[in-house]
Every structure is written in structure tokens, then in C-alpha cells.
Image (cartoon, rainbow, N blue to C red; front, side, top):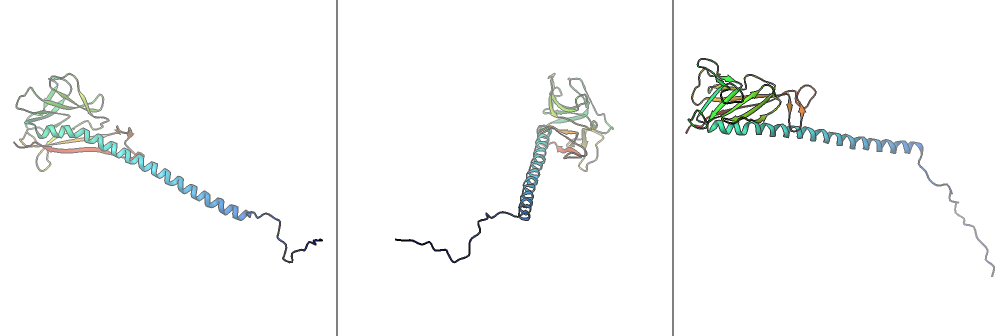
Length: 208
């Protein structure tokens, strides 16, 4: 039996392998580059937002710790004296009658016993607000990196005016300005997350 090969009558197929043109490669590369730039931009924005949120939460937590105990002790106190002082039992001078009731220290008496008190004062050598009970030769740090030196504490009336005598049921105002936050450590000023950072609070004694 003889078998004779027969050629196909259709058009012959091209043997060349298909490839991208230079224009297609440039377009694909441009699209991939734009997508990569977009992903990196979102990543950097997320990191910056995370750091900003972290700094705000840290600053807010530090502020809360600084004022919570002080506010509580003022509210339940029997007597309060404002003046200038530091560490040590005799190291305090309260504001005299007829003078503005403001200073860098405050003594809080939980009872009518004048020998039992807690003192908050500004330590100018370390730029810290510190707390010490009477009879204790050590202090605990309430707030760090303070820039304002005077006054820290002010006695005010119901209208926000500074008292000139030790009035009963007065409002105690505290103002702290910072050049750095502690958690995380972050400078305050132009070019930083905060150009200015301050804690201020006003607290009145409870009437029993």
C-alpha cells in the first residue's frame, strides 16, 4: 500500500514566537511603578499617623498621671496653702494676706492637723513637679520637662480672678508647660508634632 502525503490547502502558520513591543513594555513598567509608589506612599502615611497617634496617647497618659492624684487630694482636703517651697519640712513659705495667692508649691492638708500634709513643688534644678509627704526626705516625680517656673499654682475665685487672701472654697488652678513629652520622648517646638504643649486644670475643694 502506497501512502501519498497531501499538503494542507490552508494558509501556513507563522513560526515566529509572539513578544511585547517596546511601547507595551514601557506602559506596563509605568503602571507597575505607579502602583509601587502608591503602596509606599500609603505605607509612609500610615507610619506617620501611627507615630502621631502614639505621641498623643503618650502625652495624654502622662498628663492624666500628673493631675489625677493631685486633683483627688485637693478635693478631699481640709486646708490648702499656696506659696514657694521645695523638699524638706521647713522649706515652705505660704503667700501672706493681701498678696496674690500663687507660687511654685502647694501644701494640701487632709485633716486639720497642721503637721500632716502633702506638698507639691516645682524643682528648678531638674525642671520637674515633685510630690513629698511631710516627714519624708524623698520625693516622687509627678511631671517631667516643665518650662514654666512661676506660677505653677494659683488660688482663684469663681470668676477666675486671683485671690489676695486664703479664701475658703477657692479654686486651685495648676498650669504646666512642657518642652518634651516622656512617653514617647518627643521634643516640643517648631518642626515637631506639637509647637506648644500645656496641661491646665482647675479644682475646688468639696464642701462636707
